[in-house]
Image 1 (tube, chains in turn yellow, red):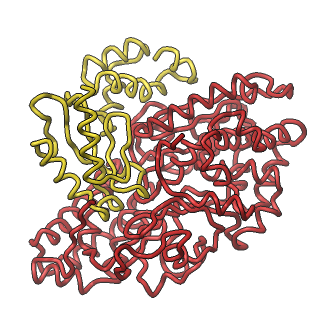
Image 2: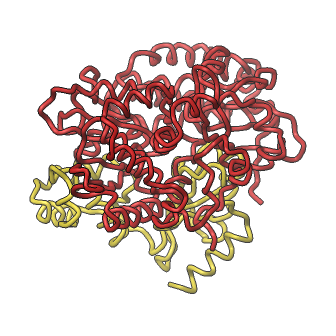
Image 3: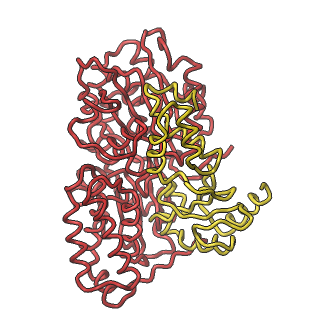
Length: 148
Length: 445
């Protein structure tokens, strides 16, 4: 994080990359993380919080080990994103916005992820899963469960 | 070896024709490596620039090529570069806008993931033209794979001496920072991007001053789209005249179109500007027609912020002027296809929901207006529409259009206005009968 910050003429520019690093490690952001980033970058904590809260990409509450983000925007919706979300709700036994009891999966839907010609799609943690079918979703969930 | 994204392209056709250029090696998995990129003629243009062209030469060549911004606005690239004041004592910055998030658009990601060096080389040449020694690529945060690919490419170019100090012995220094954004659509707007890159909230800025005069850290800054910059090395290598031999007089060159929605073969297709939209949708090389043999209902030709076209309008040339002349826009080249079973109210609700979510909240008409529109259109879609709602939507749209600092407000209302214009009866039916005229039910396979 410190090394990344040295690339910028101004330290404040490193806030978003720092938040990204933290979010990828922890899975979500909170005030404790803002404090640590503030200390590392030698910036006021409020500046970290201000940036973090603007960007909805960073969850501000704990999420499951796997954060499933289904694109619900137009190109994906035309190819069944709504029914994909329903299918995942059914498979995981949760509603959109919830986390499974074993803390493994959190399911949310998000705006366009830039994968429109390979719709429908979902992002799980750092990875994209494109051209989804029921069969593919089944396999992906099984593999993630086995890995967990 | 397989690609990270399985998106379909027309690379084979591009390689055969030698007309287009961006996709020539896009299906070659080794293209991400600097050695392979160089063996395909990569960094030749950058070397040529540093070994003898002045910044003015570069700007003149790009100006004369007629290259126009591929991010949506279509502004002449060389002209933009020329706006940087020559006598400014401040540092200058070049930024590549890789915050791709206009719904329907997925063209930059394929370049970032599969041909990162083309982007870096284009950026380097652009940076030199404005005498910049530090350049940034702002990649949307969700593109984790693109960010990793670009960081790897960055390391390679430093190792091979294509960037860094005294490049190719020319005495020119140039550094690159790979920056990950926070996934906000608004940060694709250049002034919001600048705020975001400064570590602030991504709110758009009032212009003037334009970024070319006061941009990043209040220094002269040029922001260009990924696809725009990727075209630059080819222009330097093959000349402005070659570039002009493609496309139309006012929209020269080639362009990547992201084709999505109800077509048999969605994908990213590089064609010359001026290509026929109907052909893109129906030709077996490209979209190969509408899924399930259904009839076409409408097309959004340039991303979610551009007005709809009806089937009788699609025999049109895909260039900036032709689409403007029929009341729409080329935008980012994201063609979204809707078949006859799509309820227009349902489709518009998806779009307005997006714009409401992505409005940065700085301008009242956009912040509140998109919220009201989302509520009213949501009510209509869910069977709670009331008489007069269509007129109310039109009134709100009219009060957002042209009254915001950045184009997000306009972007939000233009597809709605066109959808009411083309399918007013369907909106009315929805309000009167509390249900869709056509039942939208799209199951995934």
